[in-house]
Image (cartoon, rainbow, N blue to C red; front, top):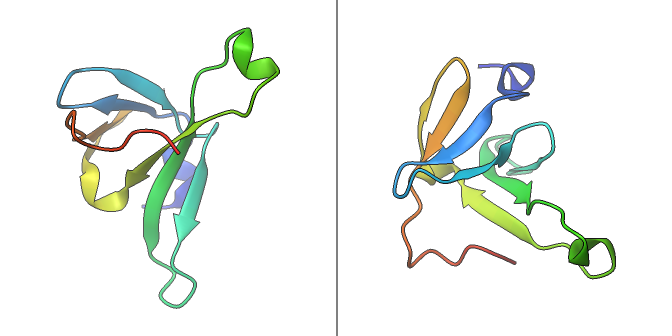
Length: 85
């Protein structure tokens, strides 16, 4: 799959059905030596408070990606996963 094919897909959590964000508003983290994708970094949705404070990010390890469909990327993050950084 090409990187451009991921753009515009919504990320949905299999564990609770939460809509986490859209790829394209994200950063991708690659291993510098192998070139393999390590994680997807989604910014948290903006609201009035995030305009003045540091924005938090949700880092999704590539291992959590379970399925890439035509319109969505399904990830599996349970409640014990440290969601924000």
